[in-house]
Image 1 (cartoon, rainbow, N blue to C red):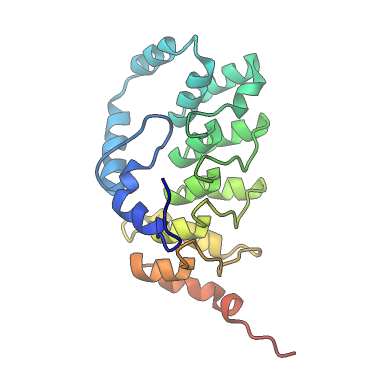
Image 2: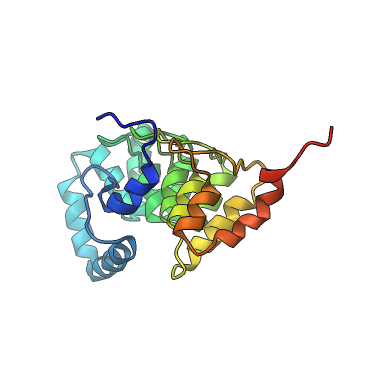
Length: 232
């Protein structure tokens, strides 16, 4: 499918964000907040036996199993799989989401740490150009964001639609979710941030925040960087 040059990917995220693949077959419905509430409730209802049965069904499919384990915070399973076959750390699903992507958008910091220690690339790209840092920022996983940055994640990486992690954090900031503001603040405090980068639709992250979130005031932290005028 081809899109016009002025196509606004962020508007698509806002209207159809519930269809963004979080792995090979995750097409969920409802808003982000509703999804998180349902997801947390469902996970709380799942017993250890349920997880063990799931692992049993995937035992002969190690690539699928490690992707599932990373997404579901099954750290011991991840360790066992990587010990048996270290190359699994680089596997991906049909959308090119790696175990690191899945652990990152799910906020499983210990799994993220284990994958990085096992040699996972910190900046793998999905078919849409998303890195794990994009994924973590999209869902305000601030602890994961911090860890990825410490391991050299590309702070200013742009997706196929020109979106940076800052764009995604700004677009999905919520006054209800504390980590939304904290994630934005963390990104804005980074020395090498390029806040003036524009998406393919021509928007900066600051412009996105102004129209879609309650935390635009945080961009005052980088106003001098954006508006600096050379005196030479």
